[in-house]
Length: 349
Ligand SMILES: Nc1ncnc2c1ncn2[C@@H]1O[C@H](COP(=O)(O)OP(=O)(O)OP(=O)(O)O)[C@@H](O)[C@H]1O
Ligand SMILES: [Mg+2]
Image 1 (cartoon, helix red, strand yellow):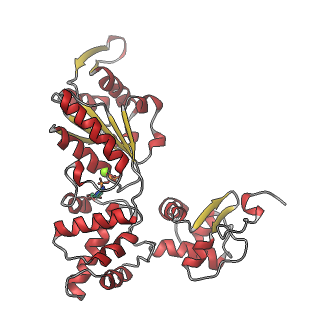
Image 2: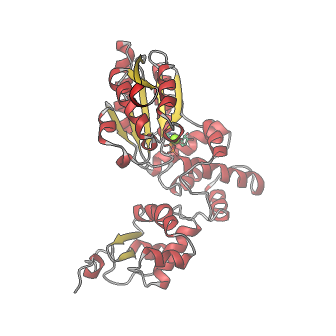
């Protein structure tokens, strides 16, 4: 499948991202509430000269969690240590990191919901009492050696806040949830990145890219890079609306940011199954994909865009879904304004 509108980033892309990553809170676009709250939290900590509360950032991939974690350290003028849940296999690994922190350091743990249980428990005491008990030896002879940890700020990031345990969540003094971005905010992201990359982008070109970026800055930046390639090779280097449209046609990204597989799912639903309801596995077979891929990669965006709905009886195309494919939705269909057919809700008639 085409990866151009995936919200996930591979290692190479992470390098490309570093160059356009906002470094300070003032450069961070959108997320006004979170930004204001963080601003207060960080300013007051700086004023008091102490480490701020631990910070949890949750939100879908590519919305700015890593960016904000780095900004926290920059605004505090503190050192930053970066690790991730999956990288911490044994509690000893974590103890080594914690005891090497300097006063006021920021420790960023990405994918914190994937941290191993024993390490998680060690983290509790570090977060709460700035102390860890390192167990030496095994069985009856094992002893716990208490070690001090310098006051630090933990910044945890997760795409799956629901998977965090209660005790973990409770130990964060500040919890921020990042939402998908509005088109005008993504337009600002595109404009800002184009300036940094030195790509001339006309206003209508930025609007065009923003509208196809699925509410996600990472996708906006990636589409900008692909459109720049096209503009340099096939046009005069300037990203206008026409150039953006032509480029995104080459990459199979449509007006709403749907790629080939998203469209295949919607088309199968409408054309082969009369708009549904149809079960996930049947739909997956129809497009030649794994059910997991359809469920985790395509559906969240199709649902959010209001093109597809999940019902107890199966997947259905909404009226907007029909229209997006240039078809007239049948009367009484989901989302057409008329009351939906009762069987969509699994009420046996
Ligand atoms: N508010 C923003 N303003 C400008 N650029 C942003 C903003 N948020 C994210 N970006 C850009 O989007 C890209 C992805 O952001 P980031 O790496 O912080 O996402 P993430 O939430 O950590 O994703 P993941 O869950 O995959 O780790 C970066 O290149 C960053 O520059
Ligand atoms: Mg990240």
